[in-house]
Length: 202
Length: 202
Image 1 (cartoon, rainbow over the protein chains, first blue to last red):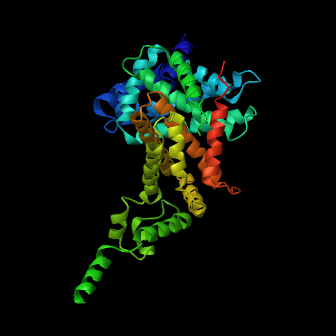
Image 2 (image 1 turned 120 degrees about the vertical axis):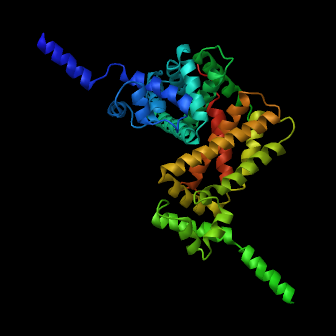
Image 3 (image 1 turned 90 degrees about the vertical axis):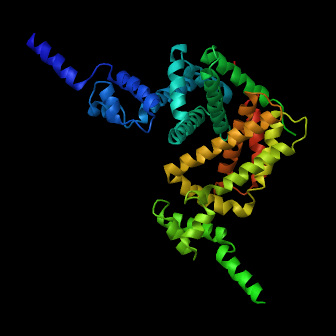
């Protein structure tokens, strides 16, 4: 009994259950109300009822609160590429990756994504970080396509096109009037890309 | 005669002939030898035999030495879009813009572009700036396409694809072994994009 209590206490000290989610929620509220620049890691920790040390156990800095999801999203994209059938073309590999990414954006996430985008749109440094993360994503996808036997420059063109489709989809998905699912919009955008490039320029 | 001498003196004080080119050359040498972070605007001005004030008449900051060409390049892209025939498709408008951009990269510029790319590749902040400039370019091209009657999302997809083709072309063009002209490579890359998207994914 005493051992169980001690174990529980140790766990409470070492690991705050749901700390990451609480920190993220507190951060988003503060970024909206005070602005990103006007918020410190200490403010976020305090608002979440946690210590600054706990904040830094979960996030490298206050920017990472907004961007840590992108690493998981990138892994989903790469897993989707890996799951495509053996004979898949470059575009089919990318489409498979995009389908996997769509599972990251269920309708319940739309409000969070909108708020996040508003915060980023107001801060040029965050915009640059977002662009860099997307460039890293495109580079990782191109490497995955090469590993599946797609030669350059096709691998890079296909990977960049996939990130373009993702970006345009995201913009439509968070638009106020949008009610369609991420996956539905993304399939349409991929078809639009295909239709757009169908006419070979003279 | 005295008036002519005074006019010349005034001109020398107010306007250093070739100052911009001298500052750029001095900056590139210093960025390579000392690194971008280890170079100040004062260092560049001194190496060019000019005052710091002259530097700031030509460039907003030391980063702009590397990026001011992109504004001209963007204007060339937009002029190319505007010059396309009335009935041009989205992809043809983009192809026309890309052809205009190619005139900015004659073979004589290849060495400069290589050195510039080496400097940028070593500095994450410069990479982010480069990505931001390309994102601004894509946004401007999409607006130009909409002005030519191309609807969304086609306009953004086509504009982003154009920037992708430009980026991949640039990478091939500055590769050590490359001997082909920018325009030749770019036409091939556009065809590769068309071929890559030809297979509609299942």
